[in-house]
Length: 145
Image: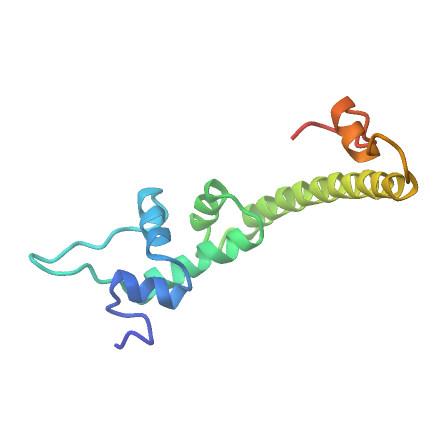
């Protein structure tokens, strides 16, 4: 097969086809997410369509917010026969996203209030934003992340 279909790819061609950098491929290999093909004597390693599919799988999972550790777990389920387990991972990720969104909404609210204070503080000696950062009095509650 040709490089367009993903068979017999060099690392550079694999990276280009997967729209990642060569160092990303190497990192995935060091992390155990992608096997390094054997190097023929005096030759160049060649990657196959399955390797391209795996890199694309990894990147898709990362775009959904899964960590590389979680991606490794998902890769054990990639045959699609353990939907309940995969759904559990996705539900946990969704819960994490919801917590992050709530924190971002609190940050947005606090920043909005600080910006309004800055707009209305004409002629004051101290900037309300800078002052609140020095004193830690900004109106953001929740965990320190």
